[in-house]
Length: 177
Image 1 (cartoon, helix red, strand yellow):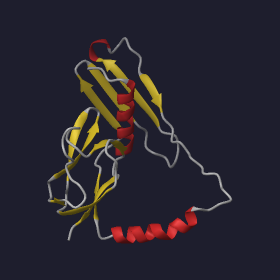
Image 2 (cartoon, one colour):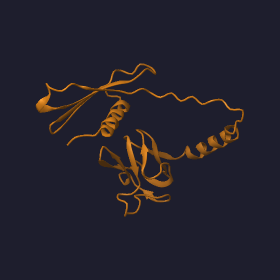
Image 3 (cartoon, helix red, strand yellow):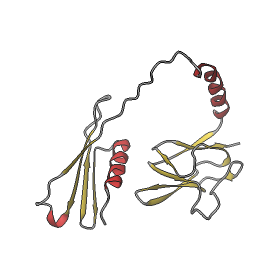
Image 4 (tube, helix red, strand yellow):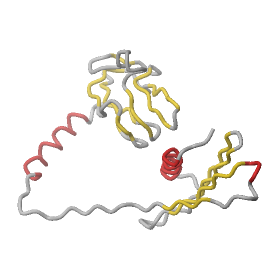
């Protein structure tokens, strides 16, 4: 089973976000080793990836992949349309403060349904109990069921179906009362 470059890049991102400094993965004849140096402020992240078949480890050279954080800087504008919207945002957050957030435990693709022809696991207004499945996050072709850690009523779905999600990204708001 060979991994394509996109799958390897997703694995690198997952390891970088997880905070571990080294991961070794062996699948059949393929061995992947990912090493990340300790993070130093906002410096450049360098990741070394080796994809070496076990039988021919001495004949192949390591594959080096470098990633760097992208800095986005907004240009100042004469208009400030965000100023009127700013007071409304804290008001919405105040209303959400008494809700409990269900967050993604991993990087991947968020799915509200177990399959395209099935109904969503949960919808707004549904009651959930601790341990009930609320969605699926697909990572590296593995579909991971995400379970609620709280009991209550789903009041908001924060992510669109089939959207990419990051580690610790809020997915649902639950009213525990």
